[in-house]
Image (cartoon, rainbow, N blue to C red; front, side, top):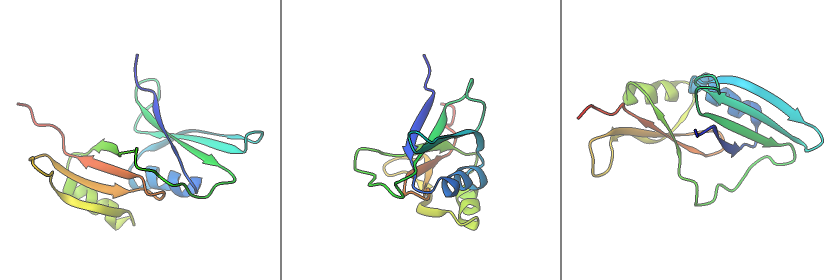
Length: 130
């Protein structure tokens, strides 16, 4: 077994695709409209779906925003340098919601950014070998 994808609903599909590809450096892997269901699915990720888990962006044509609720936590992305990644995201218009630095009660360097729909994305430094 393996994790295939995580699905999130988005209000503006192109804005979300641009964020995940242009700002976070993912690739648009595939996209398909479903006119009978009035929705579009777009899959983004850092590598081919046969080898990597990806994000499914679901756009319901008649909905332009969602209440995120309080059950969802965040997506997490490992980056080589959290400080540099956060600064690059900021310079490209991304929203930093937690500045880079050590996590609360720990030493792991993290930051949080927010996608166009308000989903939080944690940037994590690679784990150090113990």
